Image 1 (cartoon, one colour):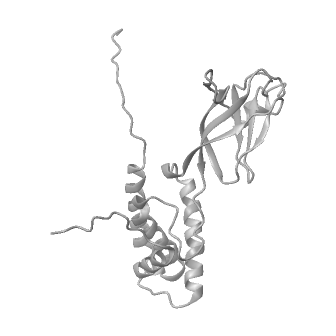
Image 2 (tube, rainbow, N blue to C red):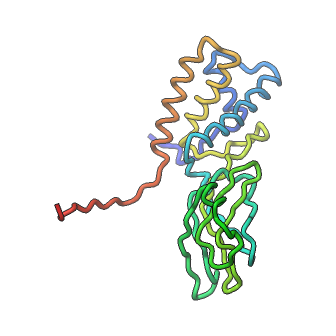
Amino acid sequence: MATSGTATFNLDIDDLIAEAFERCGLETRTGYDILTARRSLNLLFADWANRGLNLWTIEQRQTTMVVGQAEYTLPSDTVNVLSGVIRTNSGQSTQQDISIDRISRAEYLNLPDKYTQSRPAQYYVERTISPKLYVYPAPDESQSYLFRYYAIRRIEDAGAFTNTTDIVFRFLPCLAAGLAYYIGLKKAPDRVVMLKQFYEEEFQRAAQEDRDIASVYLVPDMGN
């Protein structure tokens, strides 16, 4: 028997909404039905940002350091910063990436002279509506510095009903289950318990698979 030879299956927003309504035992009958479903979909994306790492939303970014400047505005879609380095002499044969430690809000607040100039060794991320990065010490003029970091970005909004979603295919079952649960809260309360249980199971499966895989070495302590 022949196979399709393709691996491109995806769901656009219209199909996803139709699938979620069917799981609630319903059909989309009015324009408001699909509008309220799209709103629920965007709220679901916000919930996923609170549930932990979504590996496909992690991006490597950089911010150019300015001499004497300790505060920088990060892109508005930044959810959090996972890790960072200070790159010196970017693009040159002497380029280096040097580790930099993340500190808490209280630790940054207690730094006595925030505009001391040297190579930045610590950073604090202010997770507000307009996220900001604070580095300490402030960059000096001895070298050109870049702050290179891995950021968790927001999942893109649903947008037009003909769009596909900004997720990897592995999360499509979870997305359909989650949207059905959200719609069920409003339109099928008799199915909410079942829909929620199925959604949580789907999310757990997807989240367990969505992880980094790296070698681990265990060394016995021979001193005891």
